[in-house]
Image (cartoon, rainbow, N blue to C red):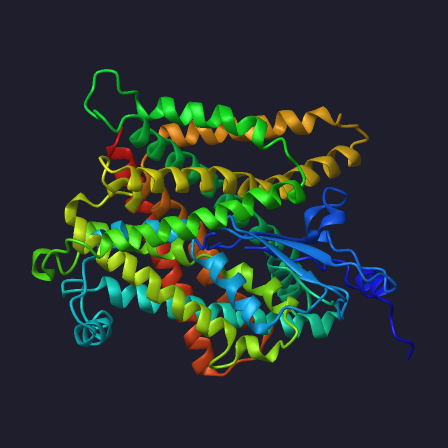
Length: 518
């Protein structure tokens, strides 16, 4: 059989570019976005943006990886070894994974601990995590246990997604599949009635991607506005001249409009690198602050109120929603077996992520207690320019990240609009896209002004959308893709039920708390 050229391989693949589903940046916070070389930006729809290097060329290839947390990762390779340039080393992949998982979600972990309660010691963590399955939530000290358990389950779901993607690539002869394509092919390759649900399955993933990414945009708008307000009014927060937070949201949105007119990810790359630097410096200073002036553990609640436990779930799962990041990272690795091993890149990266989330959440709530706010930056001193600069660092970083998060819904929705218009024989003027972008920013501004509460927004987005992307859908993919024994079926159904319970209770509790703010 003659070997295919890279171009032929990609033609055969059809849908080979990975549309990420995050973290989470940063964030982790999902990891949602796309992987694409520079030269292909804005030439084809987002889920088909992969081109191959000329084999005779020795120039570096740059691939931009947009994550849910807002990081912008550039992967370079002198001579790509395959059509997608799978030359990333294990250490590079680990760094990319950490950059994608650790983002804005970590800043909300202290308020998650406030809602869930503080854990005193690991022995109690183990015993009471077991007790959670045997009695109502009335025990003690659950946050550290639950955050760790959620992190472990999310890590397992990432393994499921990669293994299912590998199997479906083999079945369909695709070089790579994105999250939505994995879902679609899992149903499409069935030989029963489930095959008829393949398009619906793909659209379901894309719908939750859009909701999650658009939710991130709302969170970022509120975050930037609240931190800018604290810096601008640091001398006298009680002054009669202090502006309403909604005014700051409108001002931030006005500056976002010209920013989102930039269509090229290449143009955003330098800004994203700067944002990553700000995140690193800012997070370091925050951790230093949290470790000073700690209170006694006995002064903090061991477990949150029953009504706040669902909020805690939403905020915790929001931080871990970076599952789609693993697909392109695995595909770019030169040593792919090292990604999923017991001591592999994925497990190591998530272990570090879980440890950092627990550390910031634990010490943040231990220090600030009931005064803990939606983002730990809002609890930093307003009389010290070092910490005021931290607020500015994250405000600038998330302002930059907004454009990256905004890129995902635009590149799902706008090509769909163009396709429908073409089917009806109508021509859409180029300027219409700019008005569409402005409309989305204005809509984001309206939603953010309607609910200017970071903790409630994060909980709502985490419970409503991240529960599906990080927990429910990977388990469904596993059930549909592979034949399974009773134990595997029980495991997957347990994850699905847990996700659905978190979805229902978290969404309801978030909406109830939001309604109380009016």
